[in-house]
Image 1 (cartoon, helix red, strand yellow):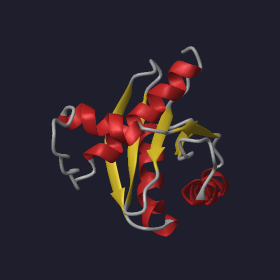
Image 2 (tube, one colour; image 1 turned 90 degrees about the vertical axis):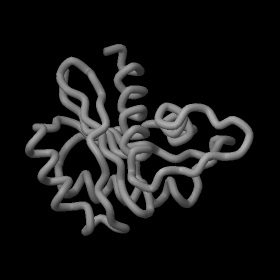
Image 3 (cartoon, one colour; image 1 turned 120 degrees about the horizontal axis):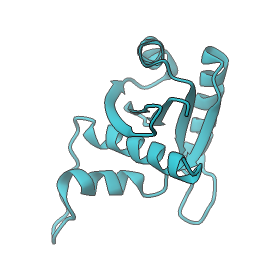
Image 4 (cartoon, helix red, strand yellow; image 1 turned 30 degrees about the vertical axis):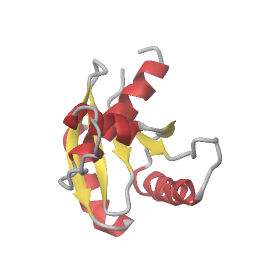
Length: 140
């Protein structure tokens, strides 16, 4: 089985997760920044260090299935990744992964809304859930 890097694209940082040859997806952390040039060097390092074969990117489709502004930003991000790294890139529907990631870290909210931690744990966990969905969908 190939190795994968899962990516949860965001406007302030990207969350990363890695899946090894056994298909075990684990959060790696985040890369802060607001555009591709901010992330490029760190992505190169992670891809080389982990010997990544394929990229898996969360694709933010609206709940009604509409492809909106954020998904179009991800399309641009994906085209830059494909040009820069020459690796297969897979899109995965990421609806509700950030909610599931927050619940896995903080538990389900009771009553008042809990504040979202700003340390990136949710982004990296969301990337691992995106990656897990992809691997499970491949029947691996």
